[in-house]
Amino acid sequence: QELLVESGGGSAQTGGSLRLSCAATNFAWNHIYLGWFRQAPGKEREGVASIDNYGETRYRDSVKGRFSISKDNAKKTLYLQMDRLIPEDTAMYYCAAGDVLSLTGRPDPDLYWGQGTQVSVSL
Image (cartoon, rainbow, N blue to C red; front, side, top):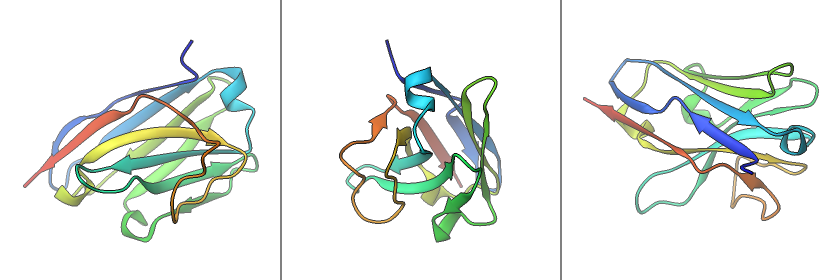
């Protein structure tokens, strides 16, 4: 059984919007942090946004004001609303769950991951 399943990726033009969803099992949902990471070809995986049990959110600087992370506890679903997309946002986006989650540096080795969903932004 997949712990985390992403959906909602696709193609958009610069300035457009996409909304990613991540359906989680109870096991994944019961961790302190849920978050979104992304990995572009040839680059390291990087943290994008996170939300904790109290609803406190954090974002990497390059997406602040453009992306919004939220969650629906009843549906056990995590969301990432992405507005004003730019080509640099092109990457595979991954949902993650864990009790330690930093948006900087290498992802914590104990994070649980989804399979990813591709986002492509064209000029």
